[in-house]
Amino acid sequence: MGLVILFSIVFLPFDTNPPTTFLEIGLPLVENIGIIPNLGDPAIVSLAYALVVSFILLVAAGIVGVFPLGAGVLGLSGMAIVTAAVYLFFPPEIPAPVWGTGYYAMWGASVIALGASFLRKKPKQPAQPPAATQTAEPPPETYVCSRCRETNPAAAELCVKCGEPLTHAQNP
Picture 1: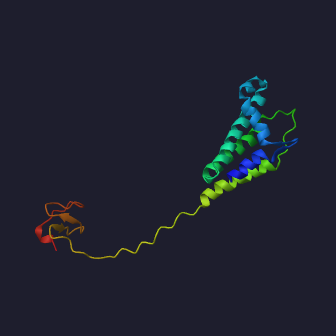
Picture 2: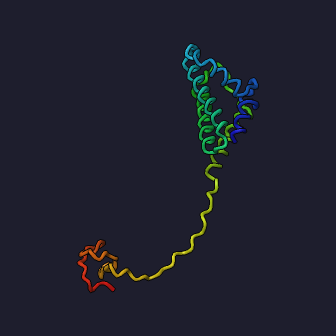
Picture 3: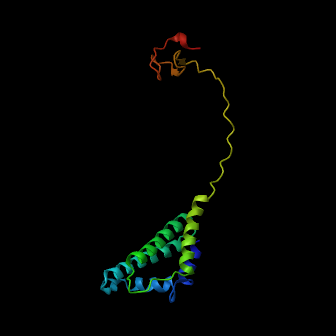
């Protein structure tokens, strides 16, 4: 799924008005991150930083795509940030983006990657033969408690489990 995320960032239109990939949106912001505070409007500054963070998370999701859990978590985080940022910080005087196929492909790939990490089958453990229930006699150097049937060392005067006094006669 990581390759799908990377392909979507580079080649598929993220916004259709005008057709723009997420690479064309995010890379200039990352390259010019130092001028973002000078953009003036706090909403535009917040939107720019949110796009930088989501761009970095989505690129990281694509790179770690061989690990479905990492790709899913990073991808979903990046897409959630970019989606929320547009609705929270987008200035009303600028037309809102019209999501393109890249937007939906990245959402889908992130969800599928996360789902795949949970659906991965665990390797089967070899079947263990059932334990034989044997009534083995305790070694002669031990005493069996008449109260709880615990095996105790020969030197014990009290049962190690229940505290019952032990006598030599209790040894079977």
